[in-house]
Length: 134
Image 1 (tube, helix red, strand yellow):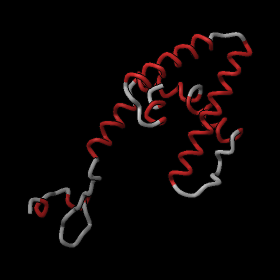
Image 2 (cartoon, helix red, strand yellow):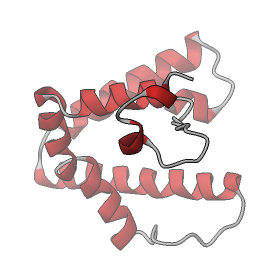
Image 3 (cartoon, helix red, strand yellow):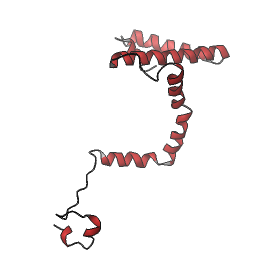
Image 4 (spheres, helix red, strand yellow):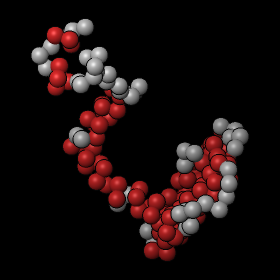
């Protein structure tokens, strides 16, 4: 109703009924906020570290541990296989630390103490629940 008499109507719409429909995603406001946060200096510096941290791990999993494609069907089987691959990668990292004489023994004893505490105090019902915080 208000647009019919607007002098800028031809720049806004060319529809015959003189209406313009603007659609936004349901979470459009949240997406705009996330985009704004992504462009802050702090988040830019954090994002630059991805190539040194998580991207390297994913690349190793893909190239050295057959994670480019899956051999299994079904979410449960694929998830189990993925957990085993990453467990193997962690064991390789631990073996490298031991070989180079770094501080893995402290790391191992710390994990063992945490596992022992959780096993006896919290009455853990599943191994997955136990390892989720280690």
